[in-house]
Amino acid sequence: MKKTPYEDLPLLPNIIAEAVCSQPYTGQEWSQGLRSGDEITKIELARQQMTPDQVQDFANLCDTKCCLAYHLGAKWFLACVKAKNNYGRDQLYVWIRHWLASYLKDPNVLRLHCKVK
Image 1: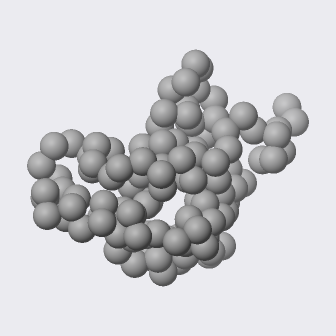
Image 2: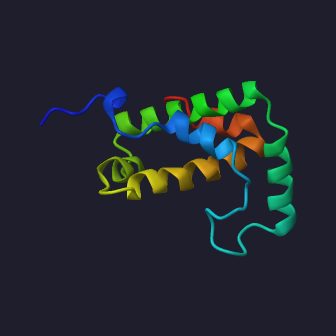
């Protein structure tokens, strides 16, 4: 069976990343209590201060990370791609919200995860 090119997938991680950057950060991607209220407040403040260049950088990193995951056959991303209805898209929102919190703490951590090993 021929594999669909990444560019033809129905998910658009860079668009989802831009959307996530425009939404208040609530820590909702994790179970209650895994992030303190202070940590959530710091992340939200940093999100509010993002420049357009930072939003674009984050979106590009998310797209790169997803492209690598697809080509490496990462189960988490393939589950998003193969999901029925909106489940895959919704799961990708969860991942990208998590990555945003990491990016706002230290952008280089996400960059390290976007390199081929």
